[in-house]
Length: 166
Image (cartoon, helix red, strand yellow):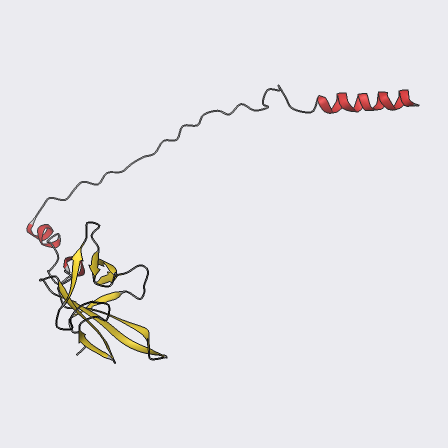
C-alpha cells in the first residue's frame, strides 16, 4: 500500500514539474510597432501694426504689474475679539521706505501692527528676503502674485484694493 502511495505522489510531482513554465519559450514573440504622426505647421502671419497692438504689454494697472506698495492688501476673515469670533476686514498698507501699517475693521485702525515691537511711535518694517518673500515684523511671510498677497499657511489670502479701512 505504501508503495502505491509513493508512486502516486511521484506521478503528481512529475506532472506538476512539467507545468511550471521554467525554461520555456514564450508563446508569442512581440513585434515592434511603428507609428507615424503627421504634424501640420501653420505659417506665422506677417507682423503688422494690428498684430503689434495686440501683443503690446499690459497696462500698468494689471495684476501682473502690481507692486506691494500699490494701495492696500485686504481680506475678509474671522478674528477672536475678546472671546467672541468676529467677522472683520484685515488690511496691510506697504510703503516704499520699507515700513507698513496694519489694521482691521471693526476694531483696530490702520497703524502699528500688534506683532511689531518697540515704541508705539516707531513704524513697523518689512523686508524682501532672498527667496522673494515679503517678511513683516512678527514673523509672517507673504508671496506677491498678481492681485494676491499669499501666506500659504493662513488663508484666506489678501487681495489688492484701492481703498483700505479707515
